Image (cartoon, rainbow, N blue to C red; front, side, top):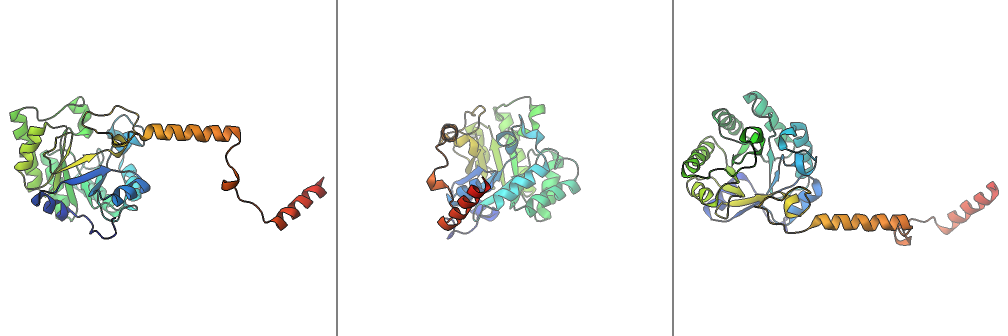
Length: 287
């Protein structure tokens, strides 16, 4: 499906917003999953720092390192032909200095990402985004609930729940746009607030728990597959139940191995008859 389609770029995102065409985005962390998502026609693949929880088993994304992100970004990029690959910059990979930020972002681009994503919009981060974009690195912003700030936010809370807070989010979104961000993720924001922000900025908004009026949507692949063993957020729709399929498959495999059913003739290699006879004769002589 992807062979005859042009690769998605940051410019494509802008054109899709102009044409009121919804943007689809999913996370992926490995080669085969990225390949299948790409072939399905999804516009963008986010190599999210959510890998810390879905793959590495951490309790937060804060423990993810730049080395982790480089490994998973390379794997995803190798499976993609069309979708725009967006890589998260993990905790403390962009808060230390502009020099460290551009070095880490550059590594992710060299690993195969088309763009990187930073959380928040304080003055320092805005300067970093401006610096990155001027250096030729495309940047996506992230507002609303920002998982890397979980220790200061104090929990998984909806953001922008008032008129005043919605205006603050809009102001932050505009600053992200002014400093070169090509899109902004809105996470756990009331639908009305997300709609207001979407209608008042020129760059696309990608919602995750932000209602249907965003320019696009993103979800974690393990959540929509029903694979992640943790709690499923309210904003997630499960499109499959892979967890039960994996458990049942592993159970069937285990039973067949224990009972000597697998491997059978169909899944076994054999010597040619002449070679087998030589082997049998040699076994007889050895006795």
